[in-house]
Image 1 (cartoon, helix red, strand yellow):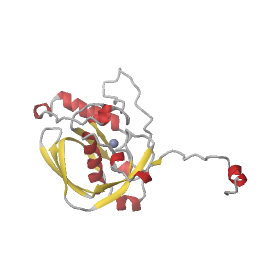
Image 2: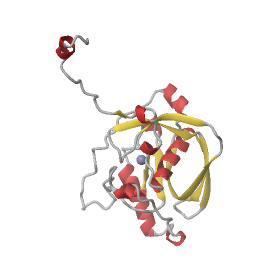
Image 3: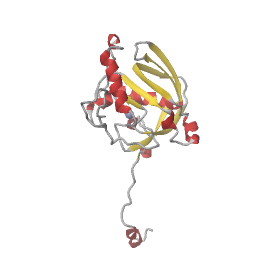
Image 4: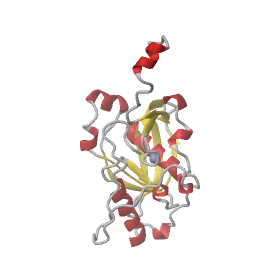
Length: 214
Ligand SMILES: [Zn+2]
């Protein structure tokens, strides 16, 4: 998930430099790639905490870094039920205090969430703008449950229950939707979809004058 405000530079993909020992990140797939719609399978329990899954988590982390607050495995075309989340104090400081409080946006340390299932713990719905790194250049208002409970596994193989409210609950719902082949545009309020770029000017102003419409 990409933040709905603040600077998003989704176009800045990491450079490919095979000389680096650390993962440099993968290319995020965009809407239209079947991996975003085909769903995922559970990570086999005996694979959690093995090097291959640990390296996948680090690859997701490197791919997400500096771009957004959550990234699910299908977004790098890996059909596994796994996502990473990180919302830093530095990123949160980019939005106004008032907006932070209204959205209940609080820092969330880096974490990998494996094989999650969730349920709402309240009927309360909040509606805020969301973006997605697989749909660059747009945001729209999306209704989400304000409070949820998620069961899954951490990267070291421990079962964990997350009790979440506010923005972290929203990020989890967005990322788990990815694991189920759903995108925010499936549940957005369609008329709120807007470009994050300049909107453009349209016809030169004199046209409106000539048409008697200014
Ligand atoms: Zn997304």
